[in-house]
Length: 418
Image (cartoon, rainbow, N blue to C red):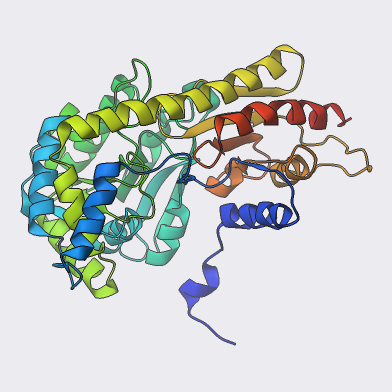
């Protein structure tokens, strides 16, 4: 049967495919350390009690009709105050759009800015930009990054591709790596965008930055989150931010995200998201508005939550580094933010006990699922080629005990490869 050209080019999520394999094994009683989905086991990482209570109260108060297309007014006003308090960013409520998590907002950004054939630049690995390019018919420019710079793009990586581009999609802390922009690197990228826009006439579409900072409050140690407009205020009319509570409050299923940026873009995004009907549920919006003003409770939650996430990431990192010290072909990048660890498993080309050669990163991964009872995600799911031997490990769906018990299984599984 014939379908649309866009539909025929779309691919299913590699992450969901891997999760399906894991769920099949779990249904057979297998104990699997599931480090695949960028989600949280809500029994391990529950949302704040005050937020949960606020949601229940909003339902009991019959806040169950359609919300405004741009989001409940008090929520947008409180987001405005929150952005000023947390990041020193000044955006009024008309420059803020609320939606059902960050995905509709990313989609809305692409649809508002990108015409078929327009050039969109994004680093690899990164999350889902390839799919959004297909939705809009954009010309994709996937910029390769390196482990040497923690898989964060640099100005030198991006510079050759900026001429004529419409959108530069960036994320920090980065999904899938859990790494972050250094101040100097982001400043240099911002300066490139400023310089490029100065070359364009008033009749030309400017170059915009989409800056996904959904993990910005999940940073560890002395790591500091930087953003384009704080570093270069003259970019304020050229940056669309993606943010929300999904990750920083372990509230992935609550579906409250927000975008903020120049009003003329946000207004068009409101129309797009409104026609799709991708609003956040009204009770969740009302509860989020209230919780954003409860600074003491919010800070207390973040302190406890971040410490728990960091403990899991550190245990996983130390386990991988110990394997490396013991001679295994693995490595990891010290976690900086988000819920991810970047892990190297350099076993492409090795042979399993059954005599099968592991031809690419996906086969290495499925070997680990079967033999080590652990699931991670190859960077090929985030736009790299299948020969890249780096993987994303997400700790949100695992207990600390699960991670501790997984490392010996990984050791045993890798020991069997020749």
